[in-house]
Structure formats: structure tokens, C-alpha cells
Image (cartoon, rainbow, N blue to C red; front, side, top):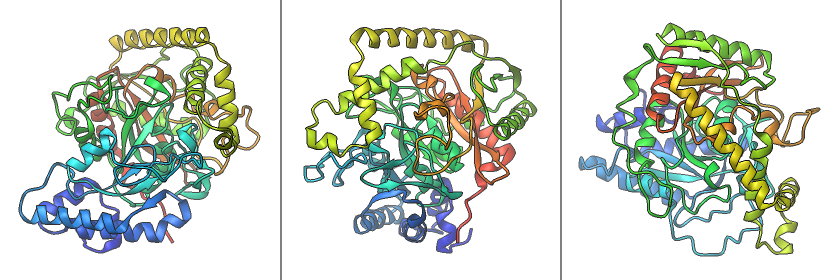
Length: 470
């Protein structure tokens, strides 16, 4: 492999680690390549809201010493990694895209996945952008401005983990931590042409608890499925600060990637029975499904049989937003994203009975999907019904609704059911915009989802594509 800084920045985490083992690359060289890429590329997309080059390079030098002594800390030692500015990160403020949060306070704790990454030797590069309080499916905020799509900077990167996806796509750190409460790793993964996984709820511990409750998952965002599995191995496992955290997995996701698709039963739902899908997106996803069939999967076109649960999702999501700002002062409320303030006001009007009714629909949906997966190992759909649209707005121009959920109908139902769901690139529109294939499994079948994504990725090579750079 070449050692030029520009090319190293485009390497996956797995490629970097392989080069470390062969003594052909050092963590300092890899980190410097990534920092150089951030310096040259980030101004166009605005993916990072915090960088700390001195600390990052110090961590890289420590990793370099460990590798030289043959004693890496863990599976991702020395790999440049970004953290969404939703996760507590020791020594760095976590402002969540909000002017209402005071940066002048003690920042002395790591969120669970950040702690696991640090313990494994990951080199933390910086914090990536989020919409305010991670409330919507695009990434812009009063604090950090608009984050843009690396394939076309006039378009949105998606959200709420838009900074993370843009950073991965542009080689500004191969590993990224994101959150997903209604699609927030899968939306930007699809729009930016990267791999992302929303794991089974509880697989990756989360602290402090999300205001959006058990809708919110923490998950990896990477260049390749192999990197996603590698990262999931590191960040999974019990943490007492999360009351819903599951025990450590009994198998390695990385080692399970070779399972393939032979005789795997796959339900293909082009529209879930209610989504209006862009024709180019629909055609690319249909081609992807034909690839799955060619890999040995038993594919049947069938809908899971539920109606759009958006109203119940709104009750749960908007109530969570309202709870977040419950103790905000009038001065803090005044600096909120106006649309977020409107959503919070709506959420505050819901009653306990409204919430319980929404939870009842959620439980019924979970039961339906549990039964569905007794017949089908996997469900595949488009990740998004549309390609990335213009940056800086919540919905496309002339759209029929005002909220982001009106174009994210493939993602939020599976937050309600807590199922694992991945997005993997499956092609590009005529305008050169990425499209994602969503692969969904039953709860606790993350390994099955990743193995299918890996088989598809290997057969197509879409994950090898990188955005153009000046």
C-alpha cells in the first residue's frame, strides 16, 4: 500500500491496523494524514465542531509507542476516530449543537462507547456536528451552522449524525460514533454513501440516558462493513450506567461476517406498503435485491403489514424533546432552533394517556415484527425514499409536510421496535448522489444483518467509492 498522506486518509480502519502490524505505517502517520484531510476538506462540509490537534497527536504518539513495543491496547489502537457531539467526552465540552448549553463546566466523564474506544486505544480526533439536541434528520444548528454533503455541498449530509457521516466519507477519520433515535446514523449514511448500523437497543450502552428514551441507539459509522463489525466488537457490552445495557456479546461480530446469504430468507419490501419512493432510488434498491438473490438468498417481495406509525412516533419523540428543555430558562429557550422550540411546545401538550397510547402502538408493532421474523431472517428496504436534498432545510422545497419524519418513513419504525438495521451503499443517482440499502434483522440478530451487508458489499464494491475532492 502507498504511504502518501492523501491516500492513507482514505484507508479503512482495517487497512490501517494491518499496516500497523506489518510496521508499514504508524498511528502518528495515519493521524497526521487524517488531520491534513480535515484541514483541506472540512471547510466545505462543516463536519467537525471541535478539534484538538495537540491532544490528538499526543494520543497517536502513545499508540505508536505501544505498537512499537508489540503491545496494542485493543482492536482499534491507533485508529483515528470521531465522536458525535452528543456523547460525553472527557476533557472536551459536549454542547449538542446548542447555544443554550454552558461550555464552562466540568467535562470529566466519557459516555460508555467513548470509554470503550479510549480503553481500546482509539485516537480521538474531535467532535462532529449534530442538529440541536439531535432532534431532526438533517444537520444544522444555531451553534455550528449547516453541515453539507461531501458528494454535492449544496445538499444536506442528513442527520442527526451528519457530521459523522461526512467525516467518514471524506477520509476525516475512518471510525465515527453516532446516535440513532429515528434514523440518525442510517439517514446520513444513505445520503453520504457510508456504512452505518443501528444495533439492537441496549447492545451499545448509552449514558446519560437519552431524553428520547428507548428509541435512541448508539452505533458505528464507517467506510466498510468490516470496520463496522470491528467497532461494534469494541463498543458493545455491559455498562452499569445504562440500566438497559445488555451483557457483552458471546460472539465476535467481526468473526461472524463470513456467514453469507446462502439460504437466508429475505423479505423485500419496496415501500413498506405506504412510502412514496423516488423512481431512481427504487430502481437501484431493486437491483441490489437481485444481487442478494444471486448470492443465494431466498428473496420474496412482501410487506411486513403495518401502517405508518408516525403519529405515535411523534408523541414519543416530541415528548422527549419537551422533557429535554423542561428546566430551560426563558433565555435558553430564546436561543433554540425555532423549529425545535415548536416541537417542544407540541410535545409538552401531550398527556400521559397520549404517551401510553403511543407505547401501546409501539408494542403492537414490535410483536408484529417479531412474528414476521419467525418467517423471514431479514427485511430489506430502501434506507431513504429520496436522495439528499438541499442543505439547510428540514424538508425539500415544495414538500408536502414540514417535519423530517415525512421523508424518513423507512427508518423510525425500527427504532420503535428496537431492531438492528444497517445501511450500505447500493449505487448512485444520475446526479451522482448515493443511495442506501437498508438491511433489518430481528432483535439480537446484529451478526446476521452485518453478514448480509458484508456479502452485498463484497459483491458490488459500492463502499469503495469516494466523493470527488478539489
